Image (cartoon, rainbow, N blue to C red; front, side, top):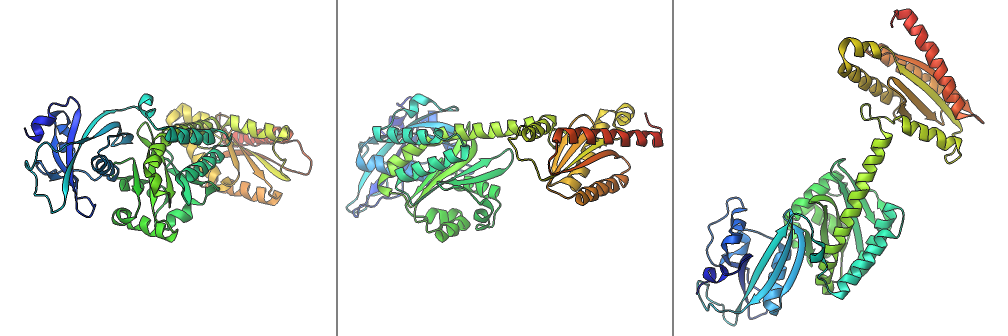
Length: 464
């Protein structure tokens, strides 16, 4: 009986591997001995893959350090192993089974002197979505560690404080010198760096590698090489894959690292790593972070979603300035005393002249373009102030802690820019407040002054 005939009797995706345990206790490279027809697609997933033959080096097709570690451990210890990981775009449930040598020297290279050959059968199935019952098959130690991490993740009301607490818990469990999380919002292309000490300056960290923060995230995904994690007791593989990251880690005294991608529905939302960890706990660390990253992914993805919803609820989609709800919240917060009354405040109403005529004569698309151009002018002049679209063609700007002269200068600049743009004209009303004042009354007064200016505009231009 040969390898292929034997493995075809397994009614799951199956592959057979072997390696030699040498006389000094080291291992040879892993060889792929057989793949059943159900799993034959694996061989065709690699571009320009070589033609298969029994005993071909496993790395002719893949290089997954975690998978190799499981093969080595299973066959050398003669103990079965189980893994459930999010890798290659799916959730993989893998069973590693040590197999006795029943083939002798069939189709194998000669054994080195003093060596012996071992085999591992890998049986796998996969799903697009995670199966929680598959995650439950863990040791009491791992289950307890995951529970502790879950508690730390949810015990604080502030999102970033929760992540800092979680990083501290992971660091303690891993026996690591440092632990951090790197959040990645692929929609906004924004990243956040969090450790047990809180949120850190990301620009400085990324610049060490000559990259932007988002470029760091993109390159790390390539460094993982389709795996879910890297558990490295030395950094040689990082030196080969990513020399810039390798140099950065050396700068910070990193000697070993466990590095996990955090994915929600196969979308990357972040990374977590622990550096200079207790290598004696490698297997428990791997299993613990497999489950913990699943919890983290849901929390992080939910935070991103809520943040975007908050932005949408406060942002005018067309002009990308604050909307009426956000303006009302600002005014109410000052009126109720939940926000501090600025020492000085410039309140400016800017109403876009001619929008109705533009919509009637050229259509609403032309009117929208006019609104976008007008908001762009407002951002140029009042970019550091609070700008809101209060209605269809009305904008309100609040200039906190400026002088009246500064407010007048900015209004003059806006009029100058509008005059140079034949398509944009503003009617403007403004009020300057200082000392003790009522913000609601100031807004109403600025609105009235704006309407006076608009009336004069239409009288001069005979517009309707």
